[in-house]
Length: 452
Image (cartoon, rainbow, N blue to C red; front, side, top):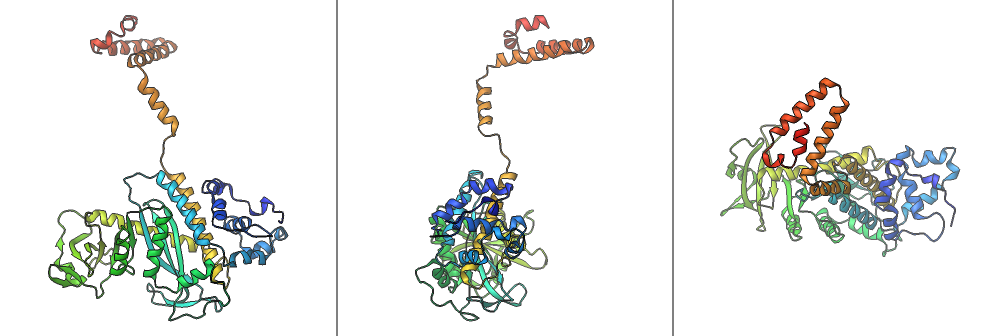
């Protein structure tokens, strides 16, 4: 094995403790990352992981004066391009450990949710990237080359943890196909097959893996692109409720014997009375497969004349609770922005293989998990642990008469050290206070009354 010095991949002091607490290298080993010779997987992973925190990229690092101290370019790229490494297994282990630690700091009354959403994974300047496809950005109406990064995250409203992802390609508008000669037994081949599936088929499998690893949540939050009856029915079959935005399309909702569009459902809904700001109407209805839901209509923020519809399969929630829970979905948008703008997603490595895209995206997600855990630790309000409880036990066992005598002794001690004017004032006030005490308490302090 090649000798590896620790200074080449040294972690910043700010995240070194979180690295150990979350057992990052242990999870890497558990997921089956190993090599027969050369630099170890743990060394190479840590080397790529810390590039961002040292404000370096791989190209500039090799060109620097210390470039000879690091592995060659091919060594790192072979590691990232390896199709046999179970990157999904590693990310699941890391996120599950972090969620367990976060839940220990979370009140049992706080709602935890799974959040599903997709984002653009752009490779506009690429031509030879494996499984490169063309997609339409529905926000801008423009087309881009790359992938759809379908992501599953967990949140308790304060901390967001990315749990799983899939870089989806397209069968209809695919520019490049799958690499030839790949071993069909590897994790890389299975993820390539998954990339060709539609998102509604990938999401239930993601949720299943999260639940099997030990994660728990009460709701699945999703945007209007995913809030459709088949996917909702699939999520409900896993004993999870769905809260999501609904768009006005051809779907029909059953109210009594009538099948109404979303526009017609709005006028059939009951107006909300009182001072529920922004909440316009709500109604209990059913989706086409017979799924009972409650639909809440809220005012559009940017256009006061329009409204938005939020669906919930948990009909026991109030309108305010539905909106409050759905607002947690914004955490995944913040995650996408942070990963792309600050953590160098899409930009740090420009490889052509699908395996490199998966491996580097996993490393970026791992960076975010460590930073999220570090942020949670630094912002949580907490007591001094066992010391606080020991102090409470000691105070509860202290006799009140002894405590009162100790208090008076302390006041008399202070009075003796003060000047005559202040001493006289303290003793006068103390005597008046003792005289005002109930007789059964004075019985415990006869000497103190006489001395004062």
